[in-house]
Image (cartoon, rainbow, N blue to C red):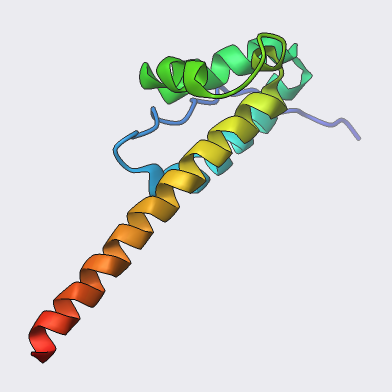
Length: 112
């Protein structure tokens, strides 16, 4: 019985919307699927980092420079991904905390 393998082109995810840091988890999950399906995981780490940065968009370079990663770590996919993870999760919590504070203040105003 012959096996056939499907050949198709996989499109990378849309660039990350940096104005919506709360969508990071969803975006990186989609990128990880792209990474697996395109066999990017078998490529050198430096190529994986460059693909991640390209897919994220222009602002990714500025953020990467702001992460506290050594030059060596900036070439390791897992280190770069984890650095972005920490960056966006903190931003997500700040936005959430601001929303919670505003909601509480609004409730207090309406109660008085």
